Length: 204
Image (cartoon, rainbow, N blue to C red; front, side, top):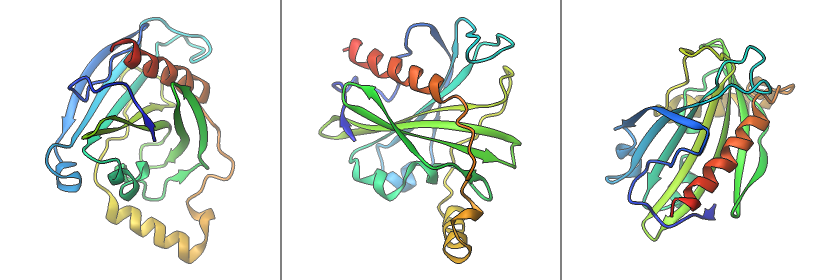
């Protein structure tokens, strides 16, 4: 957790240069978990120009920028990033930690999702924007680079993920951990994450 830029009055993150916002959608269910006033907003952004380092077929990449806004950062300890998705039998890589500038440290991991038949990567950080506003900002990509590729949707999955935890306790961590992960999109997400963090500070 770090100190973020002054609160802008909205859960929307400023889109960094070189990217364009495609859509923005709010989810209602977090209010049952994080109390009234919480906001979960997903902004879909796409690169204005293709980058050969990110896609050899020169398709512009798409990133989901997801902001969970609550009153207290303590809520994030109760509901970690993984609890926002249906993990089921998905294999999750060990986490890495990277610096994004302005004192922001993010966690990065990948998920092999057999239900969606894809691998998705997630970079997430928490910052405090005011005495009553804390945000967890997550950047998510999928290894299907088609423009209409499906993205995993945020949904409450504490029961399913509790079963996953029980399975780990009974059978060992190898049942859900990806022991040979491919850290796809790691460099891309770090670059976009740094640009996004800088854009919020520049926007103040």
